Length: 164
Image 1 (tube, rainbow, N blue to C red):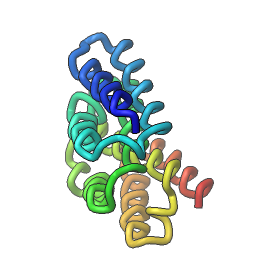
Image 2: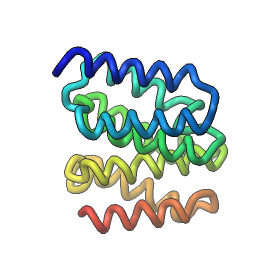
Image 3: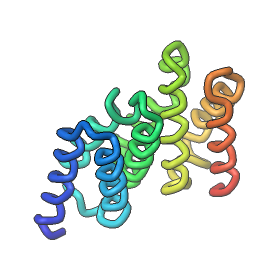
Image 4: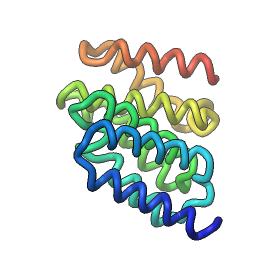
């Protein structure tokens, strides 16, 4: 990959972290997501790790603003397609851990459902029919039975059906 492209990803990442305007942050997160979709396989591992740490924080996928939460979840899902197997495993184990998030505010489960839907959109074969399949189905079942995010889980169930 052209080293300047990786630097552009880093620059977008820094702009996202240093910007408080939600509309600009949303636009930058969408830009990051689109860049990852197109050149994610060529981004350096350290850059991917930094992005994952930032995006999986309270300020992004667990943000109070639903738009920032949704766009960040999409970016995490796009990034997951280019993670190493070990990093993907850690992400999936965390996202599909219903008990870890069920006692918290509903936004945590909603964000995890959105990340899971995006992961399935980009790489269903790494989840469905693998060791992650049972975790996914348990997570979905728990979310559907919850009074917190069942509408989001219906979307996720549709994604499973569509991409399976």
